[in-house]
Length: 213
Image (cartoon, rainbow, N blue to C red; front, top):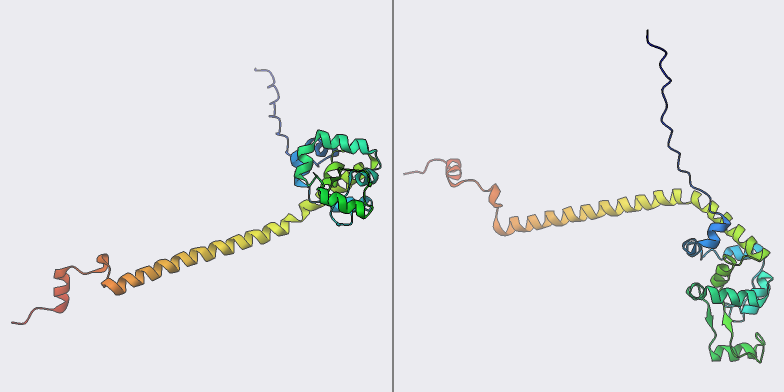
C-alpha cells in the first residue's frame, strides 16, 4: 500500500494592486506630482491669508518668507536650488518700471534695486518643497486632502464625457452615410442606373417583348 499523499501546495495568490494614497514624501520628491497639482492654490487659503502686492498678482521674497514663517535666506536658497521649476511656475524678477512703482507705493524697500516676484502658483510650489516650515507642511496636508477628495468626482464626469464622445461618434457616422447617399444620388441622376444595376441587352429585349414585323 502506498503511503499518504503529501498535501497539495497551493500556488500563492497574486497580490492585489491597490492604489496607494499620495503621501507628503512623494510630493516633496516628485516634480511630476507637483506639476499635476500646481493649480490647487486654494490650499494656501486653507492655512492662512496670503497678502499680495498692490498689483493683486505677486508677492515678494519677504512676503513669502513671512507667510511661511521662515527667514528670507530659506526662500532665496530654495529658488537657487530649483530656479527652473520656480520660473515655470511664475517666478521672475521685476522690471525697473515695476520696482519704481513698488517703491512709490512703499511696497518694497526704497534702497532695493532688484525685486523677486512670486505668483500664488509659485508660492504653492514653494510650499511643496519647503521642508522646515510648519505652515508649508500644513499647506501640503490640505493639498493632499484635496487630491484624496478628487477621485470621487471623475466618475460622473467620465460618464458625461463618454456620452458626449458617443454622441459625436454617432453624428459623425450619420454625416458620412448621408454624404455617401447624396453622392450616389447625384451619380444616378447624372448617368442613369449604375453599371451593376443595368440589365443585359438580351434581358432588356425580352422585357420589351418580341419585335413586330
